[in-house]
Amino acid sequence: MKTDDETTGVMISEAALTPRGFNTERDCAVEATVAVIGGKWKPILLFHLLGKPQRYSELARLVPCASERMLTRSLRELEADGLVSRTVFAEVPTRVEYTLTADGRTLVPILQAMSDWGARRGVGRV
Image 1 (cartoon, one colour):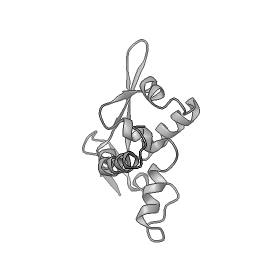
Image 2: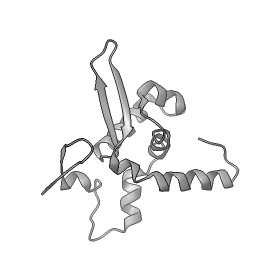
Image 3: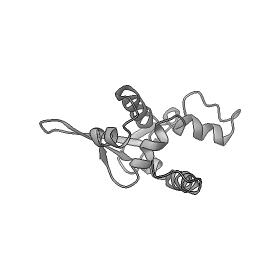
Image 4: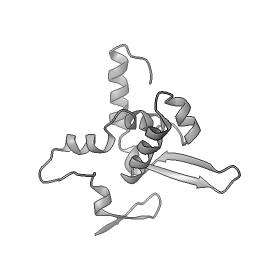
């Protein structure tokens, strides 16, 4: 069965909506969330995409401790999980922008809560 992503008009298979290695009958919802947004860089990248679309180079500047390999890998996984959209513009030089999808925007309360929690613990903005 397929569903339609209302923001892009792209048909998405149900398998694409299930996080890699996640069994809905066996695992809890927190595991499903962590399977998709877990890791060192994914939540930080998602947080930086809250305000506006970002180019790859902007994200690299915002997350300087992430290697190019990990940044690329994390963005690809977020795109594969339907949370981030990658747009390539036919320009010279080529411009690529990343934005949150409608599904990615559903994470705003979670990301904001994580930011607030970190601020209360005395940690500055990422």
